[in-house]
Image (cartoon, rainbow, N blue to C red; front, side, top):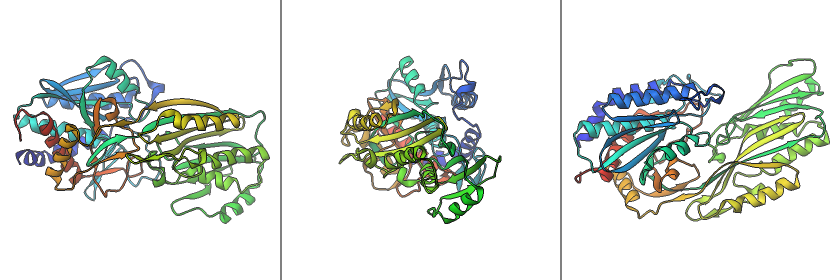
Length: 466
């Protein structure tokens, strides 16, 4: 297959491009947002860099006011490939610099290597391979570059109002073979003011994003003897991978505790170890005030019970997409206020209110304010559709692996299209490293993914059968 050979010859260029893109710290930074850079300077740089690469390859490119951009080839109806260049914050626990693009052991390491810079650039090089081979297309192929996928989709909402919407396409931002169904996603904020200051809990802070299992929680305590804390910490049993330490006695009044857990994607809370919950479980062993105990007990009893909504009584499930998942991604507790944010992924045969109404009732009973931060409806494309079948064939032909379609809890840009599915880049049996320390994509898989995407474009858009 000549395309596969061409892609093999591009290997060093692909690796260099992925490394260079990883080295741009494209984390959302609204404090430094300006016109043309609505999500901050790092994301702007990543977008402009990628568009420049597409232009260098001879494609038509467009920057849509810094919210998103696209790289396009061909003529006719529009096939969309929807990737993103923004990344979640790096977090702790890395063995290499998270923005280095380090290559070792046959892998490229860095935040965004797998989610989603590596796969997005794989799609771009797949387009280049087809262009260089002079294969005629019956469709326009447009690689859409998102910039706010991790934080609310303001990018895609803006882009789709301004630009033509592809009717079919795929998002290279999940798993192979093909994800034909994606759960609904509901982000809820709970908040409550305390009538009086707390006695011992000065602050508790854990997590940065709703869709990430927190791997760190910091606690500032007062009114408890340092020696008593040391003893309690020594007696407390953390599970493997979780640890707690007293960093320093910062002042005579305040002592800092840091609990470290294991991060993972918020759609798979069972794959992580939420540092917030382990911090609260330890705090519950201390002699706290009744009000403090009540706050901790609420969090541990409701979001802290199970991974599937059991605490709130919303442990829903269906055959197409499986169980609901619930992740507490952010907790901010001070002497007079508490705020936490939940990431909920609900099955495709249910509606938002099936989840929201029972949770709202509990929140009202406990005098919490509740706010919907964001909501995405569930999304489903039949397995028998030409889109799904074309992608399954591309996957099978290139890899020799068994093709099948399945559902996930993660939400991808596939939901933005009438007929959209998620397609790669993680292969079956590969470890889940998205949003984790030492995120990586293997070089072999990066090249294989590029070949799969090239064949997928041919199956969907080529003028002649290939």
